[in-house]
Each structure stands twice: as C-alpha cells, then as structure tokens.
Image (cartoon, rainbow, N blue to C red; front, side):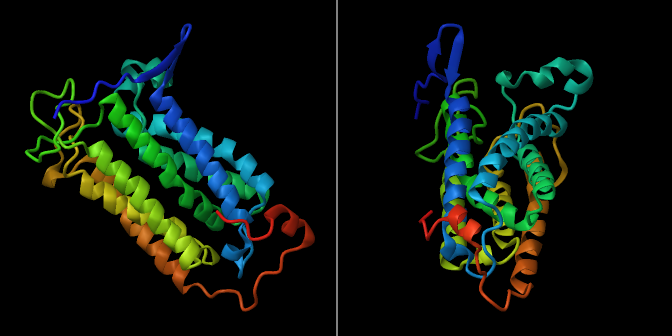
Length: 288
C-alpha cells in the first residue's frame, strides 16, 4: 500500500509555515486543558477528598506543562537518542523546528513542572499528577497522527495487507506503527483512564490514575517497539532491546508500585466538604 501524499505543511502564511506537527501539539494541549478543567469541576469524582486544585490553578498549570513538554521533549531526544549534538553541534539542540522530540523526555519535563507547581501552590503533587495523567493520552493521539502525516517513526518491514511503503524507508511495506500507537497510547489508554476516573472513582485515591497511566504507557510502548523500526543511528543493544524499551520497562514497575500504593492507602473516613469558594470554583457536577 503506497503512503498517502500528505503535505506536512497545512498552510503557508507568507514566510511562516503552519505544520500539522505543531497543530498536533496545540490541539493536545488545548483539549487536555479543557478536559482537566472538566475533571476538577466534576464534584462527583472527588466525593472523598475534594479536587486538588481550582480552575484558576489548572489554567495557570497549562503554561508550566507546555514548557515541560517542549523543553523536556527536546532535551530528552538529545540526551537519549542524539547526545553527540552536545559537542558536535550544540546550537542544533535549540532548533526544535528540525524535529526530534522524545515522549520520555517530555514526561520527565512535565513531572518536574508538576512538582514545582505543586510546591509553589501548596497542592498535593500526586493528586495533581492524577489529573494531568488522565489528559495525557489526548496529546499522545494527536502527536502520533502527526508522526504518520510526516511519514516518520515508521514500523519494521511486514507482509500484513495494511503494510505501507513509506517515502525514504525503502521498497518494503512496513507496519504503520504510528497508527498503532495512536490507537493504543491515545484511544485505548484514554478509555482505560476514563474507566478509572469515572467508574471506579480512583481520583479519590492518591496516585492511582497517574500510576495506571505510567504502567499502561510502559506496557504499550514496550510491546509496540517490536514492530517499530529503531532509529538508524542507535546502536544494537543486547537481547533485542531498543532505547524505547529500556526507557519504558522501568515505567511499568514504577506505575505498578504507584497503583498498589494508592489502592492500599486508607481513604478519608468522611466525605469531603467543599467551602463556598471551592464550590464556586468547582461548579456543580459538571460532566467531563
């Protein structure tokens, strides 16, 4: 199956090129922000503890998260995949428009942003992380779709009928691994976390939703690395491992521990009672 003729640039506005990849970041951040606002305003999800932050604090947090995603994603790609840039071409590190972003680096950037924001605002970092984790698959979905449109991060050669011949990847049909990731990291993981937040009401348990996201992403990414083509400039690691696997396997362990810890932490004996100010901020049972 030939690769569809996508133009990675949506529109040119004079010297400015609006790219699908940039729009994916914008869409993921904006939709994630609105979803987070809906979560904290839905009082039914916080019956035992109350929401960890106000709407105004979530509005402030989005800037911190955006910086964490961009800075962490770029530095993570450099440190994990192209460390030679540090001494061969350090200025290239700042040229984000040339591509090269790492999910694991972006995740670490967001984690640091959450820790600092929680400390400065006196809120519970684990519970704030639960809100952020519930929104993250939205951005992952749009990011993987943008990877497919760009014809990058393709899969390994395959004989399946839906294999795609990607430009620059040789004549063999390859797994459209970007679409697999969009479906699993984006849609499936979002539905799993939605089940956790809305049906199990796990937002009342500190760190469970965050741990479920971390472990779930680790399992999905580790599995899909078997059909995703490793970057050509990466060395051959022992036991068939890839850099993505080595960064994701610890996530499974950390996430599983967070879920176990949160499920075993005692819940408050009495339901949370919101103050008048909190009720005004949170709204009344707004769906998210």
